[in-house]
Each structure stands twice: as C-alpha cells, then as structure tokens.
Image: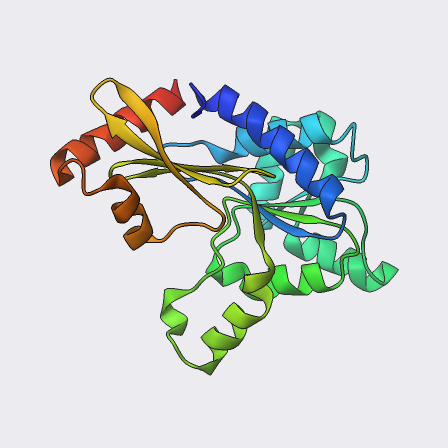
Length: 228
C-alpha cells in the first residue's frame, strides 16, 4: 500500500532503513523520494534524529560546506552529527577510516569521487538519500562501464517511493518492488518484482492502461498529496 502523505512515507522508510542496516551492517543502501518540490533537508535531519538513538555513531554528510552550515543552523542540537564529505575525508585520513552509519544527503555526479573515497575508508553501512551518482556526460566508455560494474552496482534499495507517468513505484526492505497504477479513484497495486522494473516491464505490467495526459495529471495529484 502506498503511504498517504510524506510523514507516512518517512515512517515506513525509517523502518525499512533500520531493518536494512541491521541485516547488512556494512551494506551500501539507497533511500529515494523522487518527487518535485520536496524539501530534502528537513527530511534528512528528521532521519538523523530518529535513527541516532539506535545507531549512536550516525553522521549526516552533505556535499559541501554551505549545505552543512545550513543544516547546523536548522538543527543545532544535531551539529556534532553533521559534516561535509570533505570534513569526513580529513577525519578518515587522520584516524585511518571511520565507523558508524553514514547518511549521504543528495550527492550529485560531481561528488562521485569524494563519495567513493569516503565509502572506501568507512567500516560501517552507508545510506545514499536521494543521491544521483550516475553521470550521463561520462557516456558509455570504459570509465562508465567500470563504475557501473564496480562501485555503483554495489548499492541496494532500502526504500523507494517514485512517481511514474502511470502511477508509482515503491520498495520497502525487505519486501519486493511494487508497482501501483493510478486509477480515477486512487492508486491500485499492479505487480511486484524482485528487482527494480525498467520502463518496459512497467508498461507490460500495466497493460498499456491510460494515456499520457491522464498519467501526467496523476503524477501531479500524487506529488501534491505527498507535499501536504
């Protein structure tokens, strides 16, 4: 079942993340809320506050010093848990690595090298929150292939809530990926998958139902519901 709003989505994401972190104490995990208009900073700070009692060495890492400063301004009580990627890289160099849970908040392809370096020196689990490390500009050459085969292929989805043209995708560890179709009276479960379904698999499961216009309107309604 899809969550009714953002807070319900956060609650089930926290459950899924906690289960994933216990299941694989050194795993690489992703958590995704892929809809427009989301203010990710408050979500990340709430995640940190909710998970830190269970995982006391948890850190939230931001791509740069500016984002880190904003986070510390908004949550001064969490300041000791907040840092930038470069901050942690310096600590790792001094201490020979790092431990605990890391939550990397929205790193972009430009942060790929730093993310990989941090993960290589970390002895605990890492969560990529709304991260996007794939770089389309890299193309299909040997560098991109090596990245896909290596570091990027090691990430598993702990939680995902992703609107699509015809409905939504959801995954909450340890459950399967679920596809929901948007009907005039709401979302309905359509199919489940062991791995994240591609566009062709989704289209086949939905049976081509609905048109582009209706699908885009459905996405708008779904996103609006999550914002409220």
